[in-house]
Length: 166
Image 1 (cartoon, helix red, strand yellow):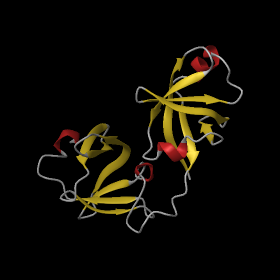
Image 2 (cartoon, rainbow, N blue to C red):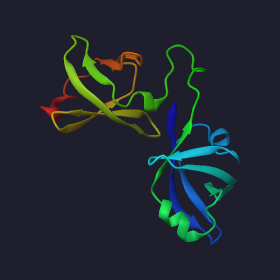
Image 3 (tube, rainbow, N blue to C red):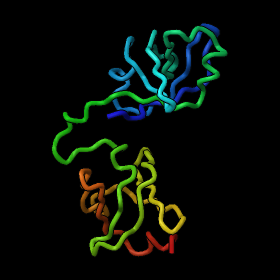
């Protein structure tokens, strides 16, 4: 499955290196030399070099040799082919949650997951409901079940959590 693993940032130096906003839990595997990354328009980039500099990942790509070429790629999301078959039962990748229908325990529709917001303390489901955004904490007291195959998440929200979207 193609999953977003990062975003190309600004150019670093003049030799075609880019800063990368890492959006994966395994950067050491996703950003190895020789790995292929995909852009949203279908183009592929092959990693020519990969290194950390002051806690920032720097990548260079084959065929991208100068600062101007990197700037042309700036802010684009990069995806990698990720094997999800090794996930244990009940485990999922956050990107599999995007597009899931969120329901209350009585099957009343809450909305659809738009994104997963990753915070240091806990992660949040950003759900679109009636044109508004609701942030639902991903804690076991609220998330009752997640069924990736059916693209459904059942929640039991505390009183007032959904009021913003009414």
